[in-house]
Amino acid sequence: MTTTPTSLRRAALVGARAGVIASLGMAMYAMIAAYAKDTGFFTPLYHIASLVGDDTDMMTSMMAAGLEGDSFTFLAGPALLGAMIHMMTGAMFGAVFGLAVARLRLGLAPLAGIGLGYGLVVFAVSAYLALPLAAAIFGSGDAIKDMAQLAGWGTFIVEHLVFGLVLGVVTVLGRRAVASVPEHAAAH
Image (cartoon, rainbow, N blue to C red; front, side):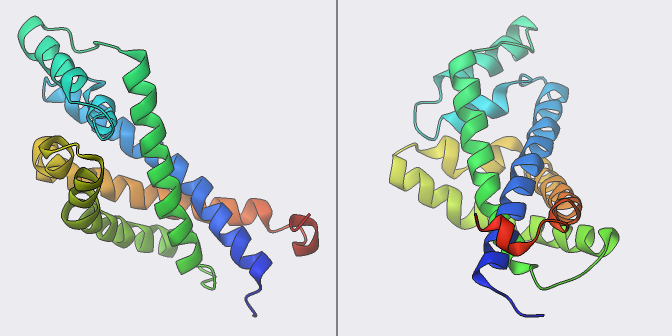
């Protein structure tokens, strides 16, 4: 099988779409974990939004959950911003995954397993490189640089395993959905 520019674009697009969906699964796990830890259901979204702002909304949510018993403090703007940043990041990592596995013709279980492994890679890249770099670039400080520690290392690892698993599964499903579309039709 040859790899054409069109097939690579399709692989990246399938991966990006799968990455957005996987980021939603990851976010839901993070939000449920935050609720279970009494730090506020929406706190992970505010945490992500602190990349380009301050951490006031994250702290407000955590304080409301911990001190007032209000685990569902909702601030629409920061929640939407955090969700958008998270989905764009998921799309980027998903596109890379789609390209990396473009030539592999594997079924659901093997690609889900590869996705789990990729989730661990994304965890390591995020925790040790991307988040500290993003914090330096945006001047967002420790809230972003130390995200894994603040979320809890175990929780942060599981979040990324969820991302990888969903990414692998949705990539297979996405491939099946576009398999019937001829390459010349996808280029237009």
